[in-house]
Amino acid sequence: METYTFVAEEKARIDKWMSERSDWSRSQIQDWIKAGDLLVNGQIVKPNYKLQEGDEIVVTVPDAVELEVLPENIPLDVVYEDEDVIVVNKARGMVVHPAAGHTSGTLVNALLYHCDDLSGINGVKRPGIVHRIDKDTTGLLMVAKNDVAHESLASQLKDRKIKREYIALVHGEVAHELGTIEAPIGRDTNDRQRMTVTDKNAKEAITHFRLLERYKDFTLVECKLETGRTHQIRVHMRYIGHPLAGDPKYGPRRTIQLNGQALHAATLGFFHPRTNKWLEFEAKLPADFEAELAKLDKIEKTR
Image (tube, rainbow, N blue to C red; front, side, top):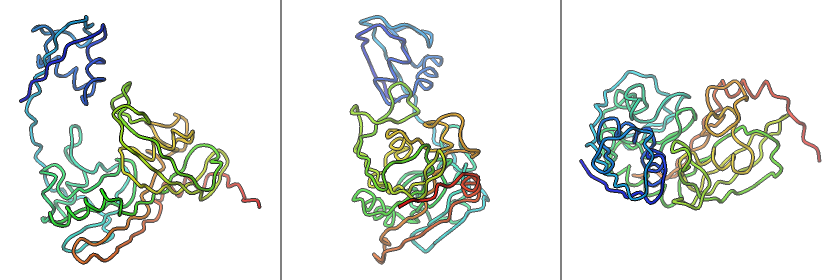
């Protein structure tokens, strides 16, 4: 249990003011207010309380309760496996690891059933998880089966040695055949569930893209990650005016009939943590993605 103290320097709604000055979401702050874990001038307030200049806010953050992560017999598309590493082709709709609201049905639950020798570096909730892809993004993900493998793969990620290429369908006609988006990404202060291109509390983010196919109102592109920020491709493509088709968080409401963004982790390459041999894997587009492409009117290339 930890306690944090803030002093308001302006008039503002408390949950909004707090979320802009911390990594806590507005909903989390509201929950703490309702539970009496957040006090203003020593008093319990309502979630819509309007702060006054000089108000003292004391937040007592309850100790986190570890989730019990249980093995579940969920089918996995295992592309590669040995004593050190598993590469899986993740299905759309599968959350990678347990969290609030998703305590079962995750990739971790499935992995624990599939094998009992995952890396423990990331703790009980994220055993073996070296990197993530979003719930509704499909494609390749590597998982470490021991701590030595985990450290090697994590180091390769940090040093930008991992090859990660994605296929994305975006709105509009992308003008350039090739391009690089170099724009820092941080949390959106107006919506803590979203990321955005910003200079405030942001990290370097670089995405390279290559045009694959043009369709009426859409473009199919290959995106290569140089960095791996949360929602990076989704944020970067929106930033240049071409949000992903089907993206409920960053794209327009009316789009293709897909349960989530049209984004697929198609290629994954890394040096094997034990042998140092280069391994590279590819995964075909899922059937629902292919079906949506088949509905679109292709624009023939002209010289």
